[in-house]
Amino acid sequence: MEPTRSRARSALALAALLGLAGATHFTRPKYYDAIVPRALPGTPRQWTYVSGAAELAVAAAVAAPRTRRLGAFAAVALFVAVFPANVKMALDFRDKSPKARAIAYGRLPLQIPLVAWAWKVAKAAP
Image (cartoon, rainbow, N blue to C red; front, side, top):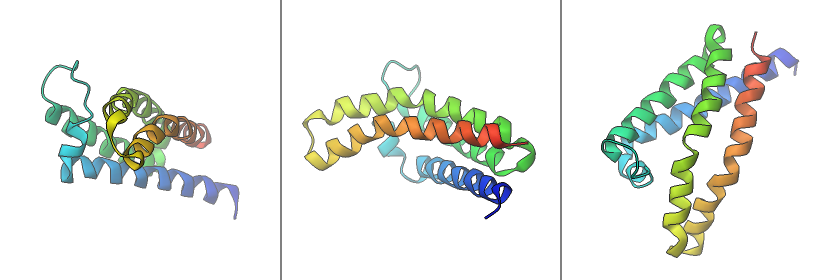
């Protein structure tokens, strides 16, 4: 596969991941409400919808070649910005089942490859 096609596929896969995640903020908001840090102003549902809309907007920006670079850098920022929610989830899940804890704790290091992936997409974009 030629490098340009591979880079486009990687960008579209990132856009799909962001789009799916963004959509689930609206279809399963209670899941996200529970991990919104309580120190934030407003209600958890407001933050769930704002972060879902942000993920959808970033997905659209990454998917479009003209805005891909900016969108991928926005994805980097988004992945960093949601890290506190993942920390809250890990702390809240300390007394849950081993499977639930593994999912919660697994989200923490997962942010590193997500940030790296978005960064790589940004750097490869024209």
